[in-house]
Length: 209
Image (cartoon, rainbow, N blue to C red; front, side, top):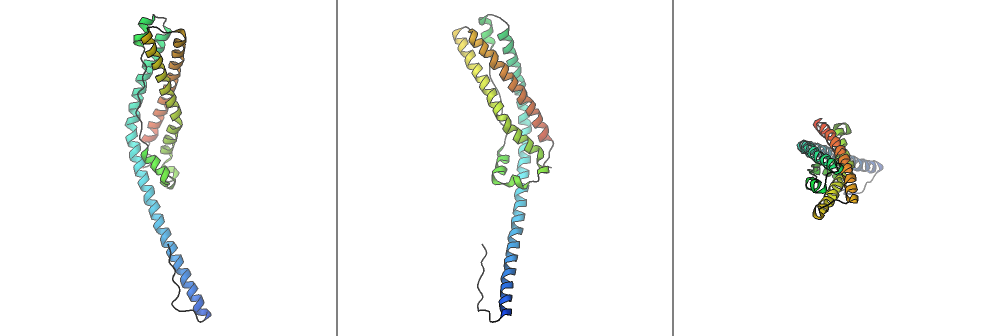
């Protein structure tokens, strides 16, 4: 807050009056200039700190995403096997024990990105210095619905398969539903895998350097 103190004595001439006004105006300009300078360097430090945090977080996410690719590949292999079993026409006693539904996925880190977005420091980073990171995080946000659908399809199929194992048979409607859920989960898996591969390439570009 700027404090402007009144003169110790009243201006007696127009010259004194204008000198007094000019002094006040100059003081205000100096104070505003100093405040803007401090604010400039504060924003510069805030942006630099945010860039470093996001860069560190990006480096941490690469091995997580690479591991997720391996997990997705293993899950897709099992889903393909399940689909073949359901289409094989083999007896339920042979098919049921081999049906396996499970998903495996590690959550990537996003605390630094979210913190920079919430406190406004993200807007202080030049767009050309953070283009790939912006692409990665925004793409992951759009991908969340697909990831959720993938988990839901696999979990629903697992529940149906577990119920069939207890009953000792697969009804025609359950088989049809399992076929549909398995195919849907495979499609989601492939989309997530492609997006994950693209995300790895984006983060490895080191656009914050």
